Length: 102
Image (cartoon, rainbow, N blue to C red; front, side):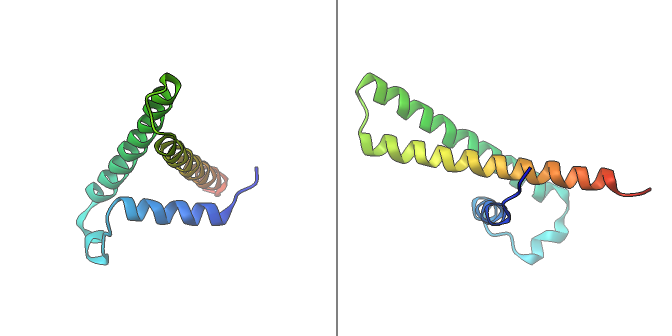
């Protein structure tokens, strides 16, 4: 499986921007910050995918603006690529942990 490090860096950058800009001072506040950032990111990804889906349905019905449909589908595609990149990185990290000698 080939990993694209540039895609992973871009995905991480997008995740940081979506979760706000947590400064260095917020890193010491506990695990709640990381889990809430992941929750917000997952909810945002789901919302983006749903928006793309609804725009596609409206386009099929002939009631949507083509520009809005293209934008929504492009955002949904970029979100899906981000989620897939993050998933691949997590799986890769887990596999590396499994390979560590005990």
